Image (tube, rainbow, N blue to C red; front, side, top):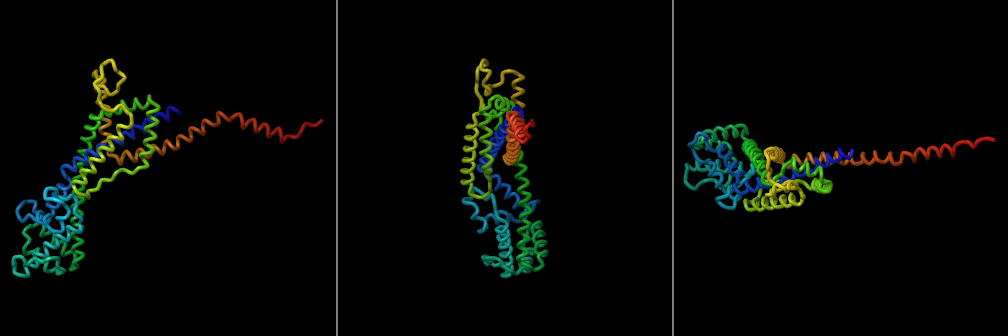
Length: 353
């Protein structure tokens, strides 16, 4: 049973390392996203598909929406586009643009006579969209959403919000697929840079009981802390600072484990140093397999390994008491027999005669 417990603790140690490496990989990904502002680029691409004709031509309404007074406060300067625009804001800004067209149409197109807010005259908005909106695809979509509302202005706005939310679901899918590929590449890069060889780490944990126990204790403490949640809100500067903080914190936690991570140019005689470069073809292939396993594992993401680690800790908590309960009978087996014998002797009738 001790052998089974060792295997379980080695597995827990590896899962904990995978969790930390996944957090490190996520922190690197967040840092890259904060630098290149890819969420904002995907958001603008989605809004462009909604408002502009895919075949080109028409009016660049996407740029007009980004310049709208309701949208401009979502980014601090002209170089950093917002990574998130609420559906309500999008609907009101677009409705205001349509109301402005309706007001200009009512005043015979006089310059500067646009509506300051929004109009509740749904028929006027529909007429302005049908008559003046040059973007054919958007015109068809808006007329459909307005007609479905059956004269209810609030319902028409909700239709626009739902239409926008549907596109944002698609944008989220694009971003997730890109993130999946990025995490896979980062997983292999991080594993190679840190020299996180699964085979090497498993051998080290199997032989070093003190290190194994410390990792299990650290894992028990770590699962009580929820994972950091990445949100698209905040300014680019705040996102950059938070990504840098997460990266440094995770790297420090990884260094504190005491595992043979990193590379060293050890001499061939120092064969006990597991951080050394492989010097034979067999060692090189074994190292490559270990790094590939680690890279693929940590690309699964921190939430996955957090859940798996929790399950393994539950299994360990049930196995440990059963180990102790099995050790007790071998020590006290003679005691119940003696007590029963004594009980029988005390309760037995004294011999007659």
